[in-house]
Length: 119
Image (cartoon, rainbow, N blue to C red; front, side, top):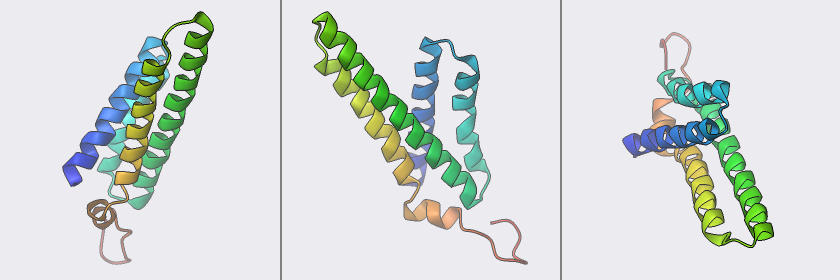
């Protein structure tokens, strides 16, 4: 489960970066490409920050899905497929956040005790 979790985080980050690339938001693109590196810090707070970012990403995908749905419905176009795809990406982002709660991640990112060195 460990490598799968990391892959899900990286894929979610790449999808978010691609989303912001479409709108040419360079600072958010760089941020999305960099935040998975927080997992190199073996502290529980780093995992929590990554989870929060992934959940915010899921929210962004959900809002985008609603916007696409409204825009396409008003134009009389097929809206279901676009909303379903973006909804699935939102669920994937949320799943990447929740997989960081699994046992391998809880064990790897345990808070350290005094005198034991880095956790």
